[in-house]
Length: 220
Length: 220
Image (cartoon, each protein chain N blue to C red):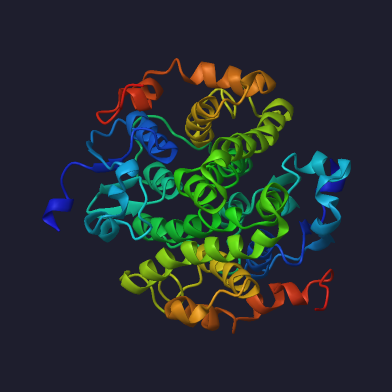
């Protein structure tokens, strides 16, 4: 396994929300890594080579510390537990941690997986290509509505999702807002999310992790 | 907030997978709690009273330590961080923790939310009632396939998902298997999952948390 012990390798796709979350974390934790592009549109995630790494045929996959890690949220928790350099991405207080993880799951469980490429392809195959965009828009709107509510009413929110420290919640929010815009969701209905997203997109590590700044980005 | 400082209250629905996960954790952690039923079929999760607790109009909600916690995975992590009594539900080693959380997210992000009541209602509303069952079955099969693969090939799996200690992965697996059976998924194609599920369903805390043993259970 000596080849696993070198510089971390991130298997990523430029537009994947889940990959973007991990890219931000790697930047904030100041971990240098090698970027390996997996083209989801070409089905490279289903190749024998990739499914050996991750039987879910999904990205991101992070090879680090001699181990292969899958699932973005699991990877983020691992980085937080093992890397003390750079930003801490969870508060110390257990309740505040649960506030962060609540927002994380509202996005990473209740929104993003229901509008990802796999599900949109299923909608298209089962019911017709013409339903894809509306499905994605509906799901994202339904998902962001309670997030807006939580951010507006929580005593915890500040410049970012939870106070003035960047947390795992922010790493999930930004890619979800990007998806919302792609699928023509009117962000004016979510002013608090918009404000926090704008604050976050001023941060170097978020900008560098943006899809357009990845080696496999395709110009539109 | 003195009314929040008493015995924990779990807002739950007997058949909800996410509620079931938390019920198992409460049992394993030996935390006594008051059960408040929220009838999803009657739309009680959308009541003003409930959305004040949880803007996502979802269950479970756990009122504990003077705080209102939402999202099952966030609640499980909170209980693990704050309760030393009873079983530990995450291993100590960071890599093993990531193995647990990988399986957790494969189920709690990539499978369960795409076949829950909300999405099935959307499928029904958008495309017709007759598509609901097939959608759920497809999603569960696609979700469990890589879980089976991971459990079979991982050096970590044992009597339970990760070794011989019950972990958060097991709390997610059992309710998902129950759903699989409800939607006529042939479990013979997932022998390792079946074996681990059978082992888990011998444990008192899992049995007591089973939907049929809840106060709001409806006999079929």
